[in-house]
Amino acid sequence: MSTAHIRPATVADAGILADLGARTFRETFAAICSPEDLACYVAGAYGEAVQAAELADPDRPGLVLEVDGLPAGFVQMRFGHREPGVPGSRPAELQRIYVLRAHHRGGWGTALMAAGTGLARAWGADVLWLGVWEHNDRALAFYARHGFREVGEHIFRIGGQVDRDLILAKGLA
Ligand SMILES: CC(C)(COP(=O)(O)OP(=O)(O)OC[C@H]1O[C@@H](n2cnc3c(N)ncnc32)[C@H](O)[C@@H]1OP(=O)(O)O)[C@@H](O)C(=O)NCCC(=O)NCCS
Image (tube, rainbow, N blue to C red; front, side):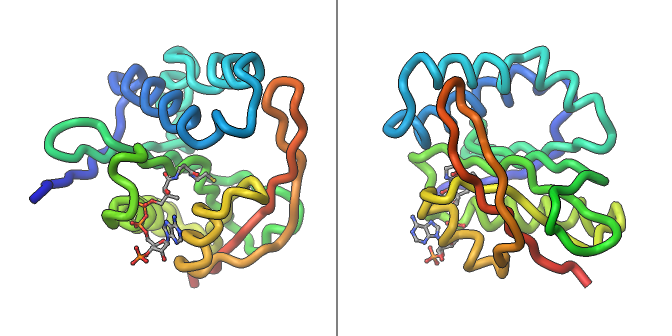
C-alpha cells in the first residue's frame, strides 16, 4: 500500500515543481497541442526560475504531494487575484492542481484540494476559484465532485493555440 505526504513547497523545491509541472502538463495536453506550442508554453510557465519566483511570493504558496517518498503532484495557490465573474470579497485562486497520471484516481487530487483549501481558509478567503480548459473532462468531473460551479470564461493561449477556459468558483463560507 502506498503512503502519501503533503508538505509545503519552498523555493528549494522550484526544480521539483518545474519538473512535475512540465511532466503533468505534457501528459494532460500533448494530445491536443502541437509539440512546438507545448514546448513554448512549458518553457515559459514551468521553468525553474519562474517556479522559484512564484514560491518566494507569500501570496502564491505551493504544496507538494509525495507518494512513497517521490514527488507525484502539487497544488499552487494565488491569493487576492480574480477573474471577472468570481464572487466574494477575498478570492483565492487554485492556480494549479496536478497529479502524475500513474497516480490518478487514488484520492491524491482530493487530498491536494483539501490541503489547498485549508491554506485559502487560513488566509481568510471567502471564495475559491480556478480556470479549466472547457474540454478537460477529467478535471471538470473532479471539480464538479468538489462543488465548483461555472461563473465565467476566459481565453487561454498555449503558444499559437487559442482555447476557452471555464472559470469555476466555490464559496468557502
Ligand atoms: C484532476 C486531477 C487533479 C484529479 O486527481 P485524482 O487524484 O485523480 O482525483 P481523485 O482520485 O481525488 O478523484 C476524486 C473524484 O474526482 C472525480 N474524478 C477524478 N478523475 C475523474 C475521471 N477521470 N473521470 C470522472 N471523474 C473523475 C471522481 O468523482 C473522483 O471520485 P471517485 O474516484 O471516488 O469516483 C487529476 O486528474 C490530474 O492531475 N489531471 C491532470 C492535470 C489537470 O488536468 N489538472 C487540472 C487542470 S485545471
